Amino acid sequence: MLTQLRSEWEREGKGVPFEVLSDFLSMSRTEIPYERVAAALNVPAGTARVVVHRLRKRYRALLRREVAATLLPGESLEEEMRALMDALIH
Image (cartoon, rainbow, N blue to C red; front, side, top):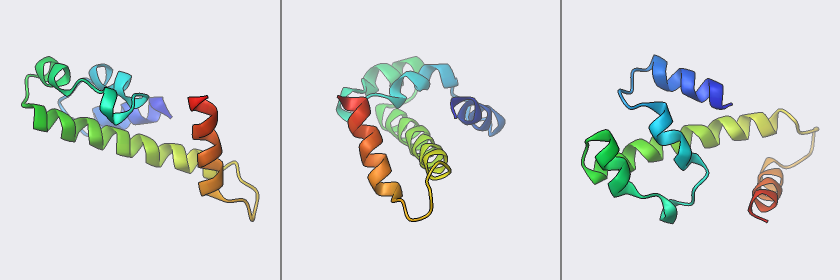
């Protein structure tokens, strides 16, 4: 999934190094140091927030697709995602 996300990001010419942002995929929104991200990217903090948000949104979409592919008919994607997040947090 990360390989696909990196490829998409680079192919679309985002102009922002994937490596700078990939560390923030697993952080909670309140943990992300947007000022530091902005400084690393040489952009305003608001722009840094948007860039990180878009990357995380695409990552969630890819994750959901991967999890959905593992489900049997009748199983709930939402329940599986909750269980996955619970397992990752605890």
